[in-house]
Image (cartoon, rainbow, N blue to C red; front, top):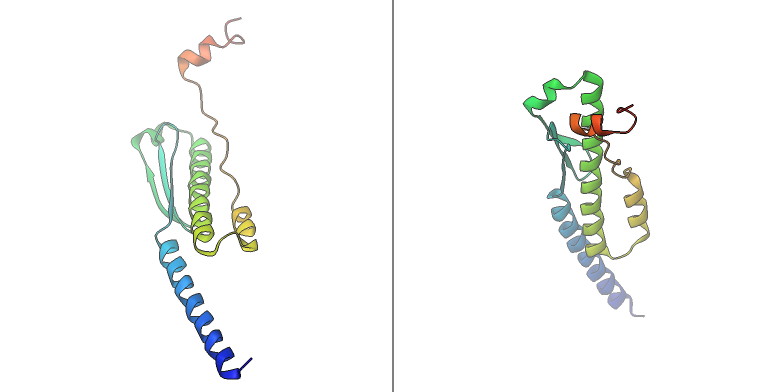
Length: 132
């Protein structure tokens, strides 16, 4: 191959890579994961990397015990991180296709926790073990 042509091709590939990277960076900068606790006591927003950007507590959060509130915030943050992770994976897949790094990226953040909620008083007293 002609060295001048090889250099021109290489320069073109670098330019394409630069454009693709700039496109991905711009889209990733817009990613934010969001989650609200089941009863609305906590609302969490995280960035593309999962870092906490905003935490809002409703007045209902004051009725919770400190440990319960901490667990609720953590669970809500994990759901927000899972939301951000899904958005990041979508951007990477759209921009770069199915690349090996995509699997590592999707495994980097834990899955959103299964929702556990406290039963309402009616649900609690309707449970068979309580009616005894």
